[in-house]
Length: 310
Image (cartoon, rainbow, N blue to C red; front, side, top):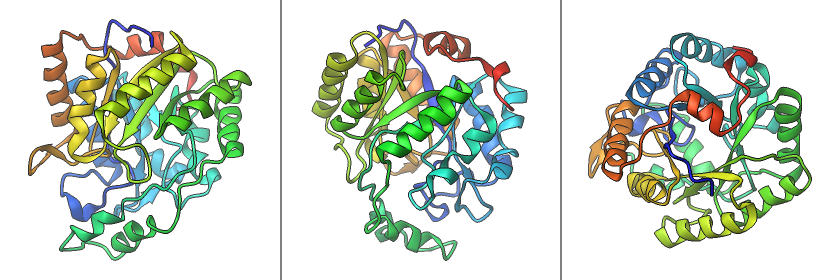
């Protein structure tokens, strides 16, 4: 792992897992997503990880929706914008890449393997539904895997990376995903410095066990040596614990309402910025200073905001 002297805080402001019935604080409209992103950046987030939603909260892939989100953020802050290519498992790969292709961002997420990505259990906990689409959407994940085939990964690396100069947040939900990244690195399609985002606690992926985080870093060290940055988060109640563990190991952190809706036991987070503030206090206690957006651009060898299509 690269021994970074500053910690990158990424904030995933809305995602595509949680549904409106779970929290009134989940940002849905473009205006809400913009406001949440700007507040998170003001609180200390150097990277903003973006999904989009339709007015009723359904995940959106259309560039027109992202056009209401990305330019206002880019005009009002200098945070690095990281556009999802994960979208939702119900989307085609062309749909999932549509926004990133349109904007050619500095950074885009890239899922490193097909998997069961199951969050149907949320439906068992919701007692009042705001929209008819929510329950079937959640339950569908029990029977439909999240496909990220090698040809799809290569397509993203070539379409966004080779053609547009976008670099990637490599989302690894299991140890095998590290070996997939190593495969594409050996072929020269993925280039260092890598940003490996360890994702824990998703049903179908690696569990939220701290021994798994340590093991993932051990294998990443073996495969990538000092050519990668590591960041981690866990879904749900283990969110802050895994961020703290990652920072303690010398890595980076990701928070946000995409990954967890709570700020404490039984207490819904009122905003993404509230979560940023909490992890910032933890980092201060650990003696880890924060990376600025310009630090991120230097550390990850990004092309710079001027070379995007905002």
